[in-house]
Image 1: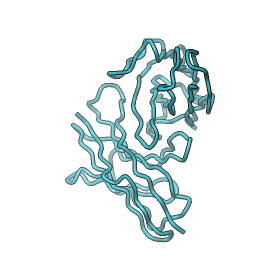
Image 2: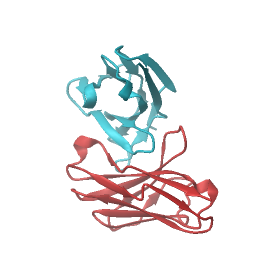
Image 3: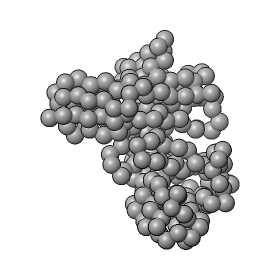
Image 4: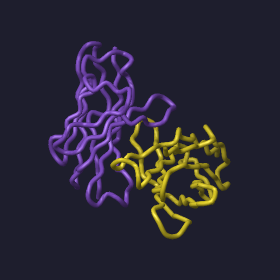
Length: 115
Length: 117
């Protein structure tokens, strides 16, 4: 069975400092991995994905994520956090062998960036 | 490209009434649509998957007679919460998948906050 873990409920970081939001996954076969951001009372916005290729993936708003197959991780990073980055972040995985295109979401990590 | 419109963004209804939520793909054909429910400070829970022209597939524990899903066209799916009760109050989000949307993962609607009083 596939699963996604976001071990931190909340991450606090000062503006201008680098941020990391952690994600580990379990899936049979090669994974499709995604990061989404959600602002209050809004749907999810796509940030970036890893399907194949370079392990370092660059996405929207200066975010990037590194796929690490040996550690089954896909941590989200940003070199310099902004207050406006404060939001709820979801990691998601879709396994090629799952039925249809079902995607599993992590529990979410709330990011607080303090000015 | 790959825009999904969800309507209404919020709705308040009386207990016992039914509420319909629409999810439209504006610039692509959505062969598959997903409906999620999100409780406060929790992740998305997949309720059902619908493919255009066929019956929806519901996840375990989701009442199909309570949450009616219709995906009659390649651009529209609807979720009807029948005989709503306060415990149905939640944030409902749709997402759509179709030709040309792979690069976006799934494309999500903006969500509907349902409050049943």
